Every structure is written in structure tokens, then in C-alpha cells.
Length: 249
Length: 318
Image (tube, rainbow over all chains, first blue to last red; front, side, top):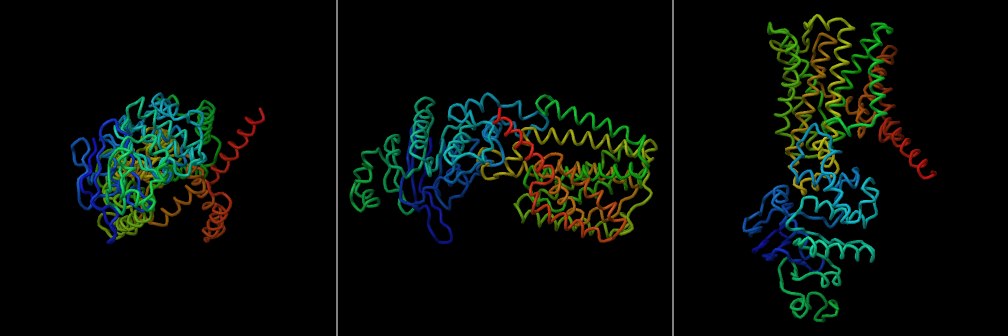
């Protein structure tokens, strides 16, 4: 479904992504891991169009999407959440998700029909599935950090994506919120068959859900394989704990 | 189509207020009728600015240009063609929208302050053309003695005309703000990066918003030319644009009727304080300082917050 071939991205001489490669098949849950500054978020930004790669191909369903603007990439079926909470602060929780649903339904240029009466059931279904239905009328800027992270995911679901990209979905969450997010990801993958690509520092979460793991270091791909292959890879162990596999236990 | 736009109480209040305004010319002296017409025109203009400023988050620093273009389009049409002046009311917003689109195509490439500064520069260019092109625009003398249809040439006639046109425009703008377009526009205001990430062509929406706001400013311009029967370069000068921004902030730029209230306060202040001193802007400066310090959400914003707090408290008590 998604294939990245030798992607490069540099900023003023600093190489953030250095010939990285990655493949994601339909229905898979793939994790990207790596130390801070490894280039995970930059790689995601290249996929979703926030950044344009200097070189390389990003193939989504065999079409090169490298360099397309974010809205066109989203319309092709890729939705994402952001590492730092990125929501519509002055709007309600319902309206946050509704914008994505309206966009998916190609109704954002409708000028005279009240938005209040549109995309209601679809928006409510999404809020229901992520457990935010009780807070639908709250101004999103007033929610707790954990709820805002979940709302991030709900907004991404509003576009009915084929590939969902989550950038550190549990960053800053409490253990309970992390457990809830994990169950949510399992539900999205298992029940809805959604393809998920995510990056995360919580190894317990990564190894409990990812079927494939890609490891990045200094902008390059060290390995992509199943969890056991990754765990036993010497280079990965070196990158994480100087030769020990303790961090994966 | 209209269901879900507003609640019954608000709608009822608006209808009663409109009926009251209809009867005012029967009681009020001519001067006050003229002043009210001026408030409607300025309020319509400020509300059109707020479409892009408060609801779109775009730093439209020179909105008065489209007001002036509307006024001049109407004035020139009525002066230079022998056609019915009524057609001028269609032409004015169309020309203003066209100028808005041309300027928008250049400016929407930039964002935030850069957008505002470029807009200010281009707007000043339009002002300079109007100011200097004596043979066509009358230069700094402007255009006087514009002929308006007989029906609306009297003070009362122009009052009713501005009242009705302003009301229709406000209804249309209210519908736009509450439409999927308006909601998306508010999303762009809050977070353009996120809005683009959900599949919205942000620049295209911003351009459309600018064209719509320019068209309504053009309507306001034609109404001004109707009330005053003249058009002059000051209508396109940047200081008026600044005043419009103050009106939006004063009334409440996140509330639909905020700019209307803000413009009423400023027009009344200018008219009555201006009788005593030509330095009335000094009072405006003090008002602005107090506003920034004590009412950052504007007058209506303040009352809305108070109202929602007391409503929430009542809900908790119950």
C-alpha cells in the first residue's frame, strides 16, 4: 500500500532523513521506532506532504505522492495525527471532527446550508467509537491533554482513511489513557481493518500491537521486520542500549 | 434550509428589533435617521471584514479598498452611463469582488502578517490610482452629485434602502458563517496546517472568503454612495481600514454581531465627540487601550462570556 524508496530530506546541511525506506501492506500495523532525532516525524511529514523530499519516491497504491500538498495526499486516503496536539482550539469537539467529515464528503464549499444539520451521524459515530461522545459539546481547547490526543485521532478518522498515520499517539498520556489508546488502535485495526503506521517511544505498546517494526537511526532505516527480528538485531540493540536487548522486555 | 441556524429567542428578538427600526423614521428627526443609515453601512462593512478577520483568521489590513471600489463603481456607473442606477447596485459588489479576487490571488500565497502587509501595499496602490486619476475618478475631489433612484433619494428613502439591504446582507453572511464553508473557514482560522491535513484546500477557501468579503464591502460602498451621494479617495485610505479593525475588536470579533455593535459605538462617538473636538481620535485611543486591557474579546464577547458563565452556574445549581 505504501512504499518509501530512498527518501532524503535535509535542512541547511543537516540530513534529517537519509535514504530511508519503508513498506506498509494493506491491513498491517507498522511501527517506526528510533531514538529522539532519528527522523521519524520528518519521515511522516514527507509522507503526508507537510515536507517535500529532496530525493526519493513515496508510493501510495503505486502512485508517487512525493511533493503533493497535504490536502491532496489526504484525499488519496492518508490521514494523520500530530505529535504535538494539533486541533481546532476554539471549536467544539463535535465541530473538530465534523470539519474532517465535511471535507471527506466534499461539502466544504457549501455556502448556505447550515453545517449544524450536516454529517451529524457520521461525526457522532466517530466520537462514540473513540469515547468522546459525552464531550461533543465541549470547546476542544479546554479538554485534558489525553482527550485532546484522542480527539487528534478522531479528526484523522473523519476522512475515512485507508492508511492512518499516528505520530506518537500516547505522548504525554497517563497509563490509563495509554491503555485506552492501545485498545482503540487494536479496535481500529482488528474490527475496521484499518492500516496503521505509527511511531512511538513506548516499547511495550509497540511490541503489543505492531506486526512489523521499522527502526530508524540518524535518518536511515536500520531494519524493517517482525518484532522478533527487530529484537534480535545487533544494530538495533546497539542503537538503543549499547548492545543489550533489555529495553524490549 | 434555515432550520438550525438560530434559536427562536434570538430570531424573535431580531424580528422585533427590525420592526422597531422600520418605525423609527416616524419619530426620529432627520439627522438621527441619517446617522442610523450611516451606522448600517459602516456595520455592514465591518461585518464583511470580520468574515475574513474574525472567522477566517486572515489579517485583512486594508479592507476599506473594496468599500471605496464599490462606492466608486456605483458613482462612476451612475455618472458616466445613462443606464438605470439600480444596475449600479449589482455592478458595485461585482467590481469589488473582482478587485478582491485579483488582490487575493497575489496575497493568499502569504500568511499572517506577511499577508496583511502585502494587502496593505496593494490597497494603497489602488488608493493612489484613485487619488491621482483626475480624468476618471475626479482625483482628490472625488465624485459628487451622484444620481440615485428617486425612490431612495430622500433621507427616509435611503434609510429604508440601507436597512433592508444591510439586513439581507447580514442574513446571507450569517448563513455563510454557519455553513460548512464557514465552519471550515473557522477551522482554517484556528489551525490552517490541521485543516489542510484533513483534505481542505486552504488557499482556495481563503481566496473564496476574500472574494465574498470584498463583494459585501462593495455593497456597503454602494450604500454609502446612496446615503452621501458622493465618493472620495478617503473611502479607500488605510486609516479607515484600521478603524474597521478597531470596530471588530471593540464589538467582539468572534461574535457575528460584534462588528455591528463596534461600528455603532465608533460612528456615534465620532459624530458626537467630533462636535466638541477635532481630536476625537484621542478618545478612540483611550477606548482602544481600555478594550485591550479589560475586554480582549470585545463588548459582546464579554457579555456572552458572562451569560454563558451564569447559565452554566444555574445548570450546576439545578
